[in-house]
Length: 207
Image (tube, rainbow, N blue to C red; front, side):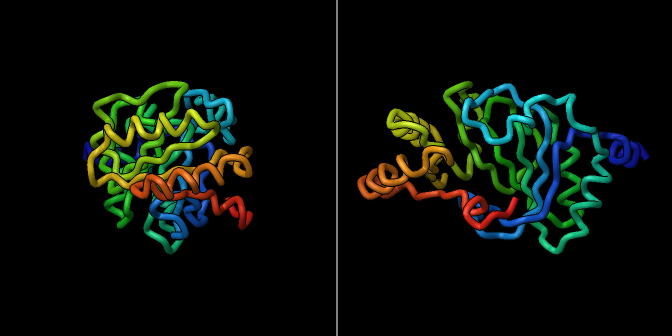
């Protein structure tokens, strides 16, 4: 009874939820249901979803309703993102997504303690607020956004701190892709442990 009450009463601020293709990183090209939670205190100057930053600007939805909406689509890959989704306790959300048959992925800056049971953790650390050292070993994927040349040193620093099995991706910041992509290509050719991540959803005009 207590579990039922928790499941039906716990809510999270949801900026938006939508069904699309994952456009970045290891799971690029896969159909996925995105759950974008409101709230972020990292403050990336180039963030393309700044409207997600204010937690109280977004309606709270019961986890029961979030999961039920997700199950109306055929894919069983759920990607929880933000904002910074770990501003919220994700234990119950991932528990219920798993019960509904979903693989749970998260995209996080790593600035908050990890809550929830995740099948895949994409860690994307930002210079504006460094990740917690204790979060680094849990990353399945390290994704560094390249805005300028100094970001390659930032990438190399965190590549040394994640586990040896962690996948490594460099991704050009969308507004500077024309300038940064050639530099990334050259860097990867010299450092083949890295791979290129592109925001393909923006190229094909899907959410």
